[in-house]
Length: 265
Image (tube, rainbow, N blue to C red; front, side, top):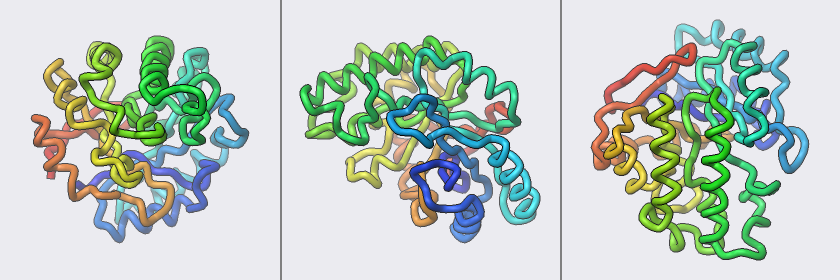
């Protein structure tokens, strides 16, 4: 796998690594293409998760040119899905020259599951169901993204994590989410950070990927969700077998918001 389509830099509050450091590590790891996708989460649970686009875009354009003979650097963002921000997403997508936009749910009833508060007074099942319910609501109201990021992100932070999670248990919501992606020409992300956080699967679980394929889904984007150089292309050596076991022969890259199918390698 020679392309990583999800990584963060110090344009995101939760990364201390410069874009150049991430690019240089990607070159060292033999990648041919990367897309930098820093966080843009409006009205997040804490301040500082919005991109300064007037610095971000020129910086990445300069680095594109500087490293053009060594690696293809694409410009993206990870937009935090909230149902009331469809207009903001459209405005940004039209204003800036993005190659790729990830849409990700990071806020559940005003809290990021990362901080654990979502599960203080509720069982994992209730928290997971609420996250999937909100995700579907967001997808119906926000249309300007290309791939749905880490669909089962919430499972990382439940009290019992994967022990309370399976495709079958949440099929009512997951099927609606997957059908919505397919019907609206959106991709589904394979995010290898699930392995990094100690889960026995990447995001999503293989059963979710198999169901996506059964329903007619074809577009899979692949990203490490790396926030530091050592996490670039995290566990990418597992990706080919993981996807092939679910029936996929190709993955998808985006340029200028257009999908391109590439053979798994």
